[in-house]
Image (cartoon, rainbow, N blue to C red; front, side, top):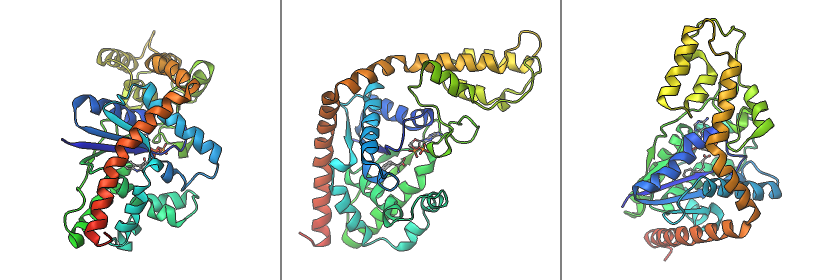
Length: 324
Ligand code: ADP
Ligand code: TRP
């Protein structure tokens, strides 16, 4: 049976890019069979977080988001990365057979340092910890956004390196591309917490109107015929609309003339569809935040299942390299 695994960092409120690029797949995949492990990468978050209270609340927010959106936590283990400390042990074992060059080639390290994140040893070793996350559960498939592809390749190389020295120990994982690799943000660049151009999945009411109001437009009048490909609002709407409704808006934008929709109309529709799509989950989120014990139970159960796997892998690795 194939094993799927993915992690998401608790580095802020989950936005539409996280949802369409990652979380949605994580929720859909378990309905098609296989084994599934999804975790909140709190060890990784320490490379950028310095505020314990904020980190704690963000971890909860991610857990609540997955449960509220309907992840089947019977089929998929949902857990906190730090509830499986064996991944840190595996990081060390793997690091002893990994050349510096492999991690030096990681673009995310350079990107993050360029953005002003402290160049700590932890940040440098980030892909090593991620490799351990993947290898600890014998994952075959890792569904993540395109920005994480190189990390999955590094995990594969580290696994192959260890296997070459000590014999078959780790399963070689494969990257699974998201069907929505790049959701644009308010400014048309990739939506990302670090660009401050995000729309939180559960934003609503006045705050939602306000943030959608910031989606980049130009000064062309509604009557002016436009190429739909150049209208950012349509790119965002497309994530939500039926094929039929998409075509309808596009055709009206392309035709222009009297009665053609202006950017205001598109913004209004975008607010509606975001409100609608996430309405049930928004309510469920409130309930879950008010009942922390239920979320704790889900996370504990997930951690137990995940840990059993990771302990078996850790033991195998220790044995193979001569520490047992
Ligand atoms: P951010 O860029 O906001 O910090 P993360 O790096 O925490 O987001 O991403 C978590 C997951 O969401 C990853 O699998 C990533 O590939 C995916 N993701 C993030 N932003 C987008 C986006 N704009 N479009 C598609 N997927 C995205
Ligand atoms: N680095 C991933 C991100 O920023 C999060 C992550 C940590 C992860 N460990 C993982 C993803 C293992 C997949 C598998 O999005």
